[in-house]
Image (cartoon, rainbow, N blue to C red; front, side, top):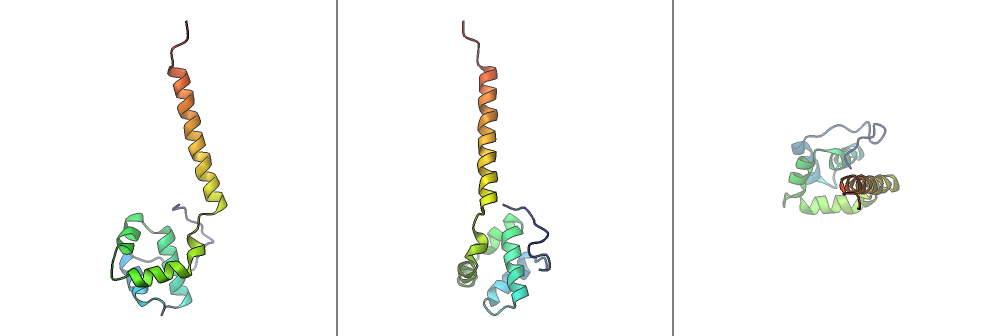
Length: 107
């Protein structure tokens, strides 16, 4: 999900893709605040920027290490999973209602 929570990592600076790449290239030799900034970028950054960054073969070893050491931050929570399931069920119910409304009445 790409929703922003103002309390989560609120003091971490917003990174550009280039700044995030520079920090990841230095990982694990980064400060705690820089680690939080990397995490915020990977969790809440633009999908295109995150995708380009994660596809960079020069950053792969450091990025793999970062992801391994921060795996708990990338797991889907109960609330996110519940929202996804509720959205899918809602979509299926709407489709069923449209199907029932468009179906011709039996003779």
